[in-house]
Length: 163
Image (cartoon, rainbow, N blue to C red):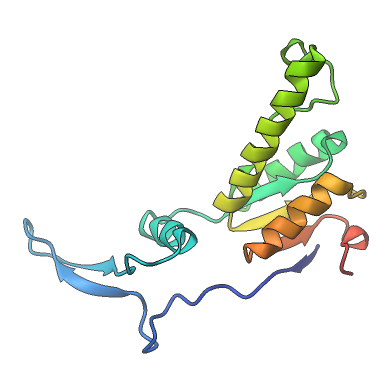
């Protein structure tokens, strides 16, 4: 798979030291490494620090046209097997369903789902673009992810807009 991304923010302070220090726990007197993130830190830095403190596995968000839902499910299995937390689109609005049978409700739902997917991109450490076609929505998701400094991979490198 082809991958590309933007440089990540440094996990070190201005003096080159990790943004953490040792602190004695008041009850059991053990020494623990705690994070020292300044109050002025960006929300993304605070989120990344919280993920480190919780020892969370990498989170990958799957993007692509919902015409590739079967391929997305396969990618989900492979990424999960590799030890990653996977988030992906939860609705295929191209398939008929009573939840979006009314055109007005469907349009409103599409907007909410787009917002939700952008939140998934913000939450994720990396993006996996699935499928051999990239439409306008997926292209916008890739641009958004790159603007946030997310690592982007493609199941089909030939569709990478910058390849």
